[in-house]
Length: 113
Image (cartoon, rainbow, N blue to C red; front, side):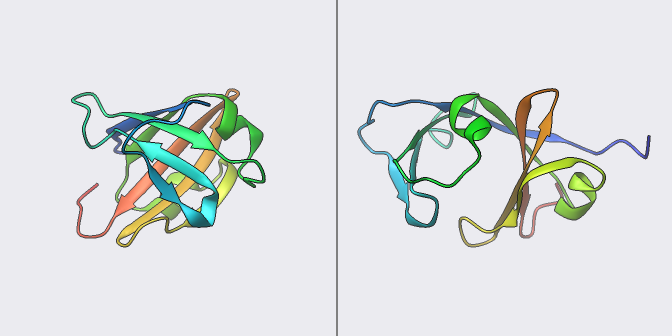
């Protein structure tokens, strides 16, 4: 095992099928998200449209997300299920699968991780 990653909790994403007032649509991903920035504990609700191409595990099982300084280092040697991409300006995200659970890593521009 290599050097342990420095992880900083960011949010917990929970899939839902119910629309939530104020949710934000991510056109490129065909999904809606709501709440982590409004929640003291970083709870984020995720609702996926039919035709969303994200892995089924991400659409059906809650994920925990961590800020990291280097996304490529964070996913090195891991089972990557969503390659690094940028859902919003300044953020790079990637997902791995760990013991049957999706884990999200977020690299935020200008953040020490």
